[in-house]
Amino acid sequence: MVEGIFQECDDLEIVGFADFAAAKGFQLGAGFFPGLHPAPESLAIFHNLIIGRWPECDGGFGLSFAGVDTTWWGGDMGTEAYDPFVAGRRAVEVRSMERWDDARGRRFPIEMWIPAEGSKYPLVIFSHASGNHRRGASFLCTHLASHGYVVAAMDHSEVVAPELRFRTDENAADRRARMEAVISSRVPDTQFLMEQAIHEPEVDGHRIGIVGHSFGGWTALAMPDVEPRIGAVVALAPGGASNPRPGILPLKLAFAWRRDVPTLYLVAENDVALPLSGMHELFDRTPAAKRMVILRRADHMHFVDNVEEAHEGFRKMVVMEELAALQREMLPMAELCPAEPAHLFTRGLTLCHFDAVLKGSEAARELLAGDIGAELAARGVEAIAAGD
Image: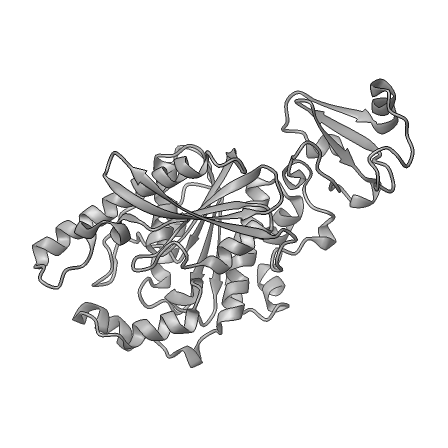
């Protein structure tokens, strides 16, 4: 029923289609909302925005009025049609810009993936891993935008600020000081990005989620401490466990959220840098509704664009001894999950989580609450949900 779909909305009136048309002086027939067959059986009126419900849509809506993205207001075009693993119907515009932060004297390159159809969409912030950049998971950002999200990413301070970059002549004390400065920059970076993105005309600033990988996953988990507008989190192999391996950033998480921020952990079974034991620790500490899904035969780089290149590149590069110890434990890519199943895993479940939380999709909730392992296995992905 429409009443159930809109049960959390204020100032909402459900009216019969014929009654609405008569009240507004419209005549029913082929000329009313041309091209719509059959006519809507009822309308929802919310703050003077009109949304039609069609009898064949099984609880979803077939058209947006007044530029409203109906996937928020009405959910999906039927549970059977919901498939978060395939590309969305919307073309995606990529918008590049630079923004100056007066407070810190830094210029940040920003990338935004925006649905080409004019409307208001939820905002998703993407935070990249240490040593990566704003385009490091464009497969994910493009996928989310094609399904009706504005996605914003930036090059974080350690990329843009010369004083935070690695120096060959730094001693141990210098390195510790630099790492502390890098870590302390992350949340202010992300707050700055969010404020820039929220003023773009396509952004609905009342629905905001964040996703990040590694150091970016830590950033995603740290943001709800300071930003009450964050409504959903996806953490991809995040840092922040209490006993990091040598060479890994010593990140800490307070989890001082003071509210429920539904959180999805997507992690890798064979992650050498950030082992599965640390993922379980963070999951257990998360003070919110939460799920964790483990990608089988995957390592830390399975969440970025060019998986094989990134994995083998790190495995073979010349690094300090602390990181060389990690390299020696890493399996060659030929023994791990290929890139495409890993990308399907990440993009589909990330989208499903945001659809469930930010758009209120019942179909997304049902998928996440069901047998996720079987759902993924049907698509050629080996994964297990935590607790299975």
